[in-house]
Length: 213
Image (cartoon, rainbow, N blue to C red; front, side):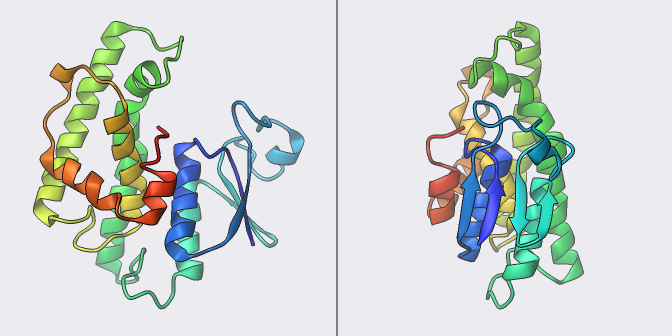
């Protein structure tokens, strides 16, 4: 039985939960993070000195960093799937890694301020100019995703669903869940179709498009 430490509303915890559903893996989850047990407790720091969720315990193996965790789960438990979540062929795997890394860096950095201000109503994120700048940056990177999905007509790394869609799909959920100014929200028909396509997957309905941003 896998043990996942982190609150269910965390976007990075939800990557792990969704991956477990895709792989049919049973798990137990413990609430850690803001609003629950603090991650600066010695018991948590012994598992992750960065004091960040999620943390995975698989027997005596402990792992942190969400993308590392879902890669591990796919490698450890995904053998034999007709459509692997994490392909072994080097170029296909590199394409998955490319979009996972893009989500964790460029895309996440762009939406951080606007999301915290508009969706989470954070008192520390009330600067109007910063909200507008973040919203514009977010729209720019979503435009990159729009063009990519227009090319593939399916999923972000190509025709098959992969780990990249778990990472990117959760950010897409935040895009549609955040009340952006209409003038700063470009029309993205390929992204909207992708959003609906992901919603056909039970794991996304449970841990992505589930009313939680």
